[in-house]
Length: 311
Image (tube, rainbow, N blue to C red; front, side, top):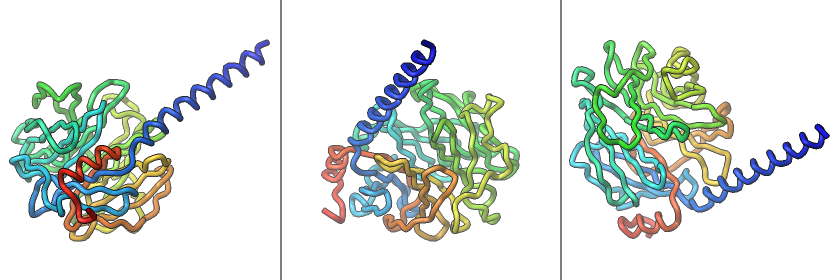
């Protein structure tokens, strides 16, 4: 009897897992392409490109800006949370401010500046966020100056409202500069790629792994293992701006990097253990990109608004 009960429970478990996998698959099937937000050093405004394979990119609007934040926009990061596009970016060079914007279509944006640290911390570089489904909170993180070098800071917010500087705290400090953190979740672990140390040290983009996002949890390990692991082979150095894109309908991810003085480069992985460098083509002068999957309807609307060199 107990054996039969165990078999029934096992079958139910497989059925639930199958339903969950099907739901995930259906959700991904609606996406047909990718959008790459990026900036260019000369314009420091939002640019967009699209791709059907996340490897070969075509600039929208003839590689001209598609949005002016009325500030020097650098390092744009866009992700979709609960049906809404959220964008954060750096303001110019040394400002203790990040910008946050919301949009339904990546054409019309509402938002503005948020002071996240005291002026004594000089800057808030390359902000990004990870939405924690369990906590129903955004973890927002960026690089500011403390102890004479760049450290990773963070705050948590439910709705991006009423954010004050006293909500910010240290995320991790490796004893030397760390910037450009980006986080992806895989198999219940968090993989954090970031640029380690000073430019002249040429350590490039490296990887930390942690079972939790919360630095107050004893299990948190970002910043705890020296510089982390160098996992990207044949990486141009110096380089920065790591970003990750999951391929639609595949258990495969691409990790992009932004070398100093040359075009973006990328690697692919299926397990975050083995990484293979691949060839990619990106818009001229594109820097510090991010990625978002889109539906055919969303892409059509963007192409209608901005056009592309392939139209």
